[in-house]
Image 1: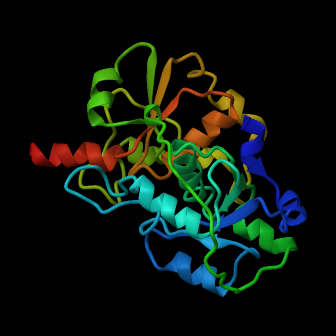
Image 2 (image 1 turned 120 degrees about the vertical axis):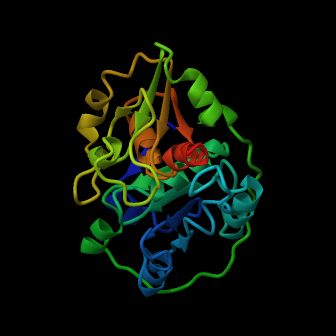
Image 3 (image 1 turned 90 degrees about the vertical axis):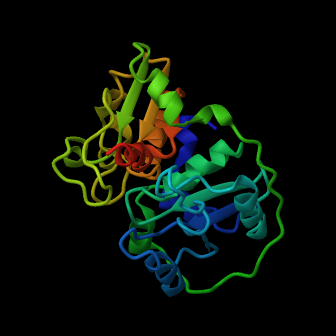
Length: 275
């Protein structure tokens, strides 16, 4: 898909709700209250939407290293997607959340990583939809689809690759967290504050406004200083909100973005070991 096809409007979605080749996925989640997203979904969601949970579906079990949200086992996520009717490389998936793309973009990236590029984010998320269009609390029965992941391994990097490449002149390492966390002034989650040496800061919240609407006209200019890089390695706290920046890079027409999946939570887990 082109960069223009990875963002859709509520108006487009309402016009295509009954499209048999479309599946909507609700990705709402709260890091502070991991059960909240599921409760919100049950209380009301976009008609036809299924729910995927960041911890249960879009991540795997936490280990000593690897970060707070390790990538899910592809076959397991593939089975889940098949069970909600997704047909690999055929179904258009529209993902939404209520958190400025934080969790929907994780699904967008995972699907692309597994070779399914027909996926877009809903501009404005659930709140924008709810302003004009109906919601439902209907829970939908399992569907029959098929999903056989073909992993795009070049889309992801691990700590060893980051260490080896981060200081190369043709490589840019992007920290997606808020500036205070990047600067080490504030660290609410991880045991060590700061950032990976050499990283530049592009806070993920700059991609949208406060209403979760993409700043479409600003995406190209936002990445002006990194567009010529051969490789852009992107991280955040745990590999989730970095996907907002990866989506932004794609919107800007830059296809060299890669996810450091373990992110700062993986990087500093080794620093803790050395203390």
